[in-house]
Image 1 (cartoon, helix red, strand yellow):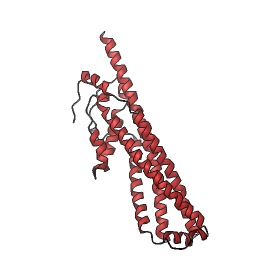
Image 2: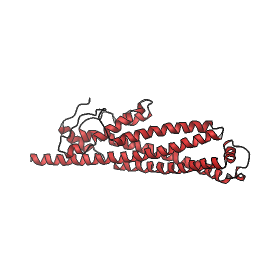
Image 3: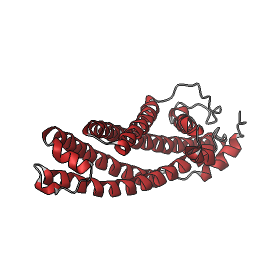
Image 4: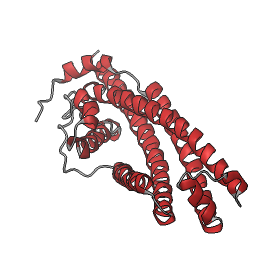
Length: 262
């Protein structure tokens, strides 16, 4: 357990607080782009499933990359259109994945370094580890979730609004946290698993059966990605505003204490 610092020390730490609203805005902006791209992907995969059902020979020719003029086949122009738009969407989506990842990590760093200013304690999960754990195998299964729980708890504005001491005990991982975090985390890993299966079937697709499975898994992955991005946006907004409210309550408490001593 990390020791709590004195109240005097906490008051000096309050000057280190940096609002995360700007980084939260950009993280949510790019996550919103991912939601849009995934909704388009759901539409494209749905169209491909319909094409498979209505024009199986045309889709098979495209799948096997045969020398047949696909555009001359029944539904061929539609199949070419789906392939072309899917390619453009892939480039768009990859750019948004990179930008949303970078801005999310920037936001996570921002809110993590605010913890001492808001609580008077060092965070149980250091900012570097909170961000770096995403790239460490096995650790990325649980540490980001723990970090989110800590950020949620240490940004609780009610602790100060109720007139309780500003100092809080370090995080205990067994404590109940917002269901919002659980939903986000379950959807995030569901997205990764379904996308792995989609990639597996896409790489090994040799017939329409495999291609149908790939389309369904990709459609599922897109839906889970959109939901995970939505909950991530909600989580970012909630934690950011909770920190703002807690910090404002902390400043109010300091002013009241200063006025009482005059």
